[in-house]
Every structure is written in structure tokens, then in C-alpha cells.
Amino acid sequence: QVQLVESGGGSVQAGGSLRLSCAVSGYIANRYCMGWFRQAPGKEREGVAGIYSRGGRTYYADSVKGRFTISQDSNKNTLYLQMNSLEPEDTAMYYCAASFTGGSCVPEVYYGMDYWGKGTLVTISS
Image 1 (spheres, rainbow, N blue to C red):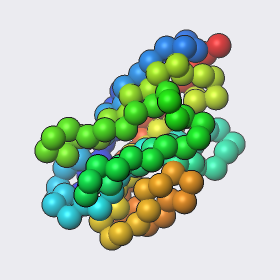
Image 2 (tube, one colour):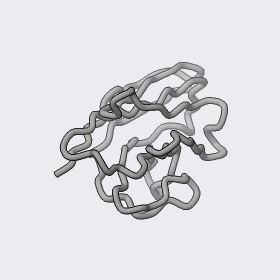
Image 3 (cartoon, rainbow, N blue to C red):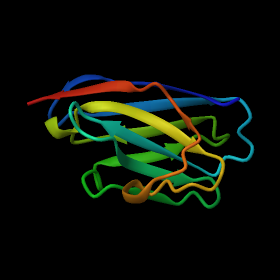
Image 4 (spheres, rainbow, N blue to C red):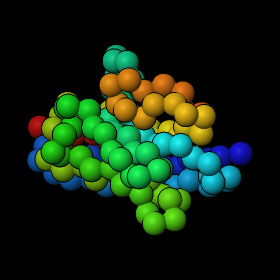
């Protein structure tokens, strides 16, 4: 069984930065890709950033390009999301998720996530 636990959320002012972490435990050898997702109150969940295990290719939603960076540590047990130049529109619950069965971690067309964390709340004030 795979478990994902997010941390690093909090409240900051617009223009500030936060770094989210997602600790991954369990059998992770065949992980295909991972991603960060968010859901704001009253809105649908959306993809934010994705990273593929083979080759390390990354993808970002247009709304966060140039501001957010997805990465993982060398043993791939922790996924990160560095968020800079935060805007009030970034306020949401942020989730990490993993696909082991060949899903898509491209934010605009994500599908096939096999495991999800419970989320960490990010609040940006103007």
C-alpha cells in the first residue's frame, strides 16, 4: 500500500512563497508519475504540476508557469512544490497524487491517479 502525506501549507501574503512537501511511503518502485493538484472552495479540482519518474519531465498549468516548481528528492520518497509570487487566486487545498498504472500527470489532462494524499491548505491574503 502506498501512502502520501502532504505538509507545508499555511497562510502568507500575496507575493510570498511556500514550499509544499509530499512524503511517499510504501511500495513505490513502479511509480509512473506524480502530480500536485488543488481545489479552491466552490471550484473543481485542477492539476497544478506533474513530474514523470522516467526522465524527470515536468509539466505545469498555465496559471502557475514561471512561479511554481515541482521536484522530487534523489530517492523519490518526497515530492516538492516550490511556490513563489503567490497570488490570492492560489488559495486552495493542495493535494499530491501518484499514478502507477500509466495515467497522465499533465495538469490539463490528468487522469488515472491511483493514490491521493489528504491535502494541505494554502491561504494567500491580498
